[in-house]
Length: 143
Image (cartoon, rainbow, N blue to C red; front, side, top):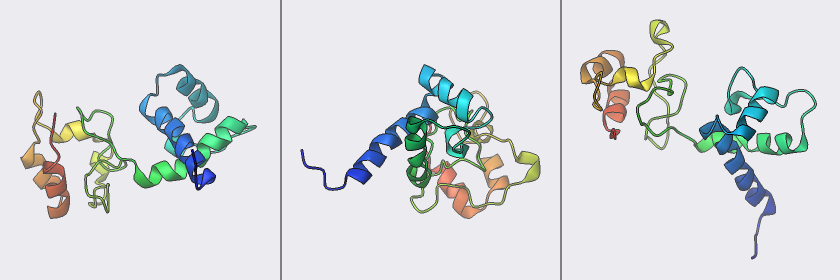
């Protein structure tokens, strides 16, 4: 094996651990890190904390990499905030461009779907978002 850039390789491996903290929040190790380092938030908003371990410092270094390239895949959409989370498929911008509407600040992606089915509610989407966001949202296939 010949690795050309050990720093990048190490950061990628740490990124896998960071991704686990995001995607499997109920795993035992994730619960331990959450309780100690980010009890009121998630991994992407965590900071170094008080008296951090070497492992935590290392995993936290991958936070920058994850923030640059992660986005949610839509399932039922109950955990994905439409304003704060990256979930669109546009490779240049994963976020909606429309400014957040204060009354809808806690809306989730599931709120943009027809209740009880896996279809977009085009009427709601078109009334809230502008052309670019509307197209990006409605082009996402729902499983």
